[in-house]
Image (tube, rainbow, N blue to C red; front, top):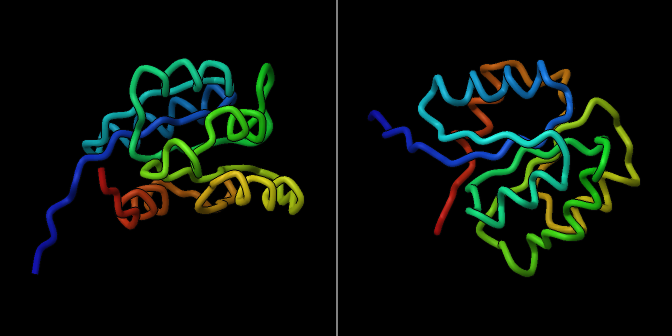
Length: 129
């Protein structure tokens, strides 16, 4: 039985320019509407315009990091339908725990996120509006 792939709106919040572009290219080439931000402050501006289905959020960024973004955005309170996935190169248990408390759904090490894995992750996320 074939399952219909659903296009999702995704916000990639990543300060590494090359990674940001790579994620956007992979996601868009598979039919997902993708916007990008390079820090938490820019991400807050974008989500104020329109909530995405999924946010891929780096923790370590200049201007406003991922934890600060989550504190402002408050997915648990105001954006329960948005799935926040933490993407990081660091296994920082304390920050990861804090991100979960603030509403993040999953944590993925960037090193493990091949294009195939990234797309599988997006496909596996159930979004309800």
